[in-house]
Structure formats: C-alpha cells, structure tokens
View 1 (cartoon, rainbow, N blue to C red):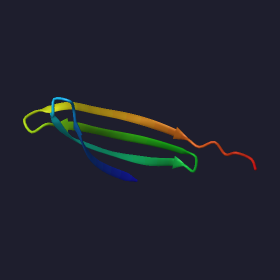
View 2 (spheres, rainbow, N blue to C red):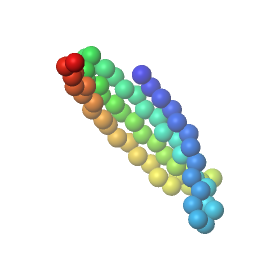
View 3 (cartoon, one colour):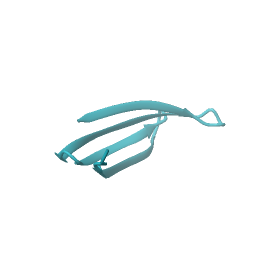
View 4 (cartoon, rainbow, N blue to C red):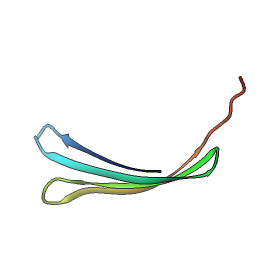
Length: 64
C-alpha cells in the first residue's frame, strides 16, 4: 500500500507553507505491518522542513 498527502499551513504572520507527505507500507504477515514515510514543507523559496520516519504496527486479535 502507498499514499500521498498535500496540505498547507498559515501562521499568524500570514506565512503559507505547502506540505507534501508520502509513504509506503508492507504487510509482513496478517498481523504485522512496516511503514516508511517522509515529507517536506515548501514556502515558495525554501524547503522549511524535511523528515523521514519508519513505523511498525502489530494487530492484536481479541476474543469475542
């Protein structure tokens, strides 16, 4: 699975930052998933913030 997101921020000084996030996930088993995602913010002249991260998700099966 994969995904892409776009959103913008406006602060009190009316400075606008456009943000782009993207990532992929991979199911190792029915209950275990790993993720890799990253993104950046751009205000028209500079890249204000950049990040990359990983994730691990485990689904706990509950009894009914």
